[in-house]
Amino acid sequence: MTGAGRPEAAPTPLGFRSSDGATAARGLLWQPADAASAARPRGIVQVVHGMSEHIGRYDELARFLASHGFVVCGHDHLGHGKTAPDPALRGVMPARGGADAIVADVGALRSIVSARYARDVPYFLLGHSMGSLVTRVYLAGHGEGLAGAVICGTAGQPLAVCKAGNLLARTLAAVRGDDARIPLLHALADGAFSRSVRGARTPFDWLSRDEEAVDAFIADEACGFMFSAGGYATLTELAFRAGRPAAFAAVPKGLPVLFIAGDADPVGDRGRGVENAATRMRAAGVADVTLRLYEGMRHEIFNEIGREQVLADLLAWLDAHA
Image 1 (cartoon, one colour):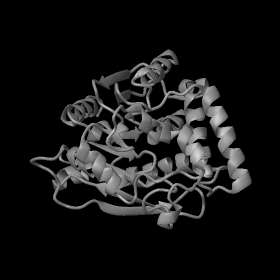
Image 2 (cartoon, helix red, strand yellow):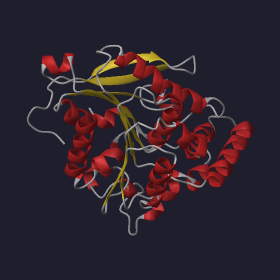
Image 3 (cartoon, one colour):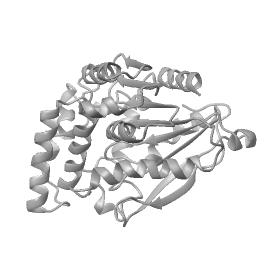
């Protein structure tokens, strides 16, 4: 992911008050090494990270984009990374209001970062996995003014499944508390993905065929934690909102949208769920929708074997819309 022109400076920490009203959200900002590009970037890419990880995992992607003149930013969601007030609270989110706060925090960071640059600098969102659901919900209410959105590794569960999962998670959260860790919820949700790879070496082989990338994920103490009941209630509510016909209909019709995923990704039903989401967005009248499925790749295509092609395609798409 790296190479000549890679920025030498470390990302700059940034922070803001989360929309939950109580939490200090923590994030990072990457800028091009060239002073002129840093002052006047080709565009801004805000990364919305996935479930049970943190924004620091996107350092190589961010450095790659920064080396090509883009500013990159992102923050740790509620219950994730450095935004979680204590490592023991990673995965804990409120069953009621968690989805609203996570979506609103995307808008809060967008306002903070966009204010640093000229108003005509193109602004993009890139949401991965759970972050793709957050991004899709955000686009339905606040997509105006964006130059484009990248929906990476998204899910396409039927609304009835999302609703049932949400009801179960909310009920368990009400009985046992938002912070209760319930193996049943894990087994029905992300835990099920570990069974999608035959002869898997680890429970996280579904993330990537690159063993080093999988091992790095496992070794990262801020990754791979189980969501609480409140966390699963938040996740399933995001999935339900993202899949509603009204959400597709509310996306600005002129917004360019790029769907990318591996065709062996269990989260997107091996491409079928991703293709369905792209088709529904086109049917809702969004004129510029592109779908790219990468052969053999699993969930984390930026950490996959052959990711150089993914990065090249992403850069070309950003260039074409910046």
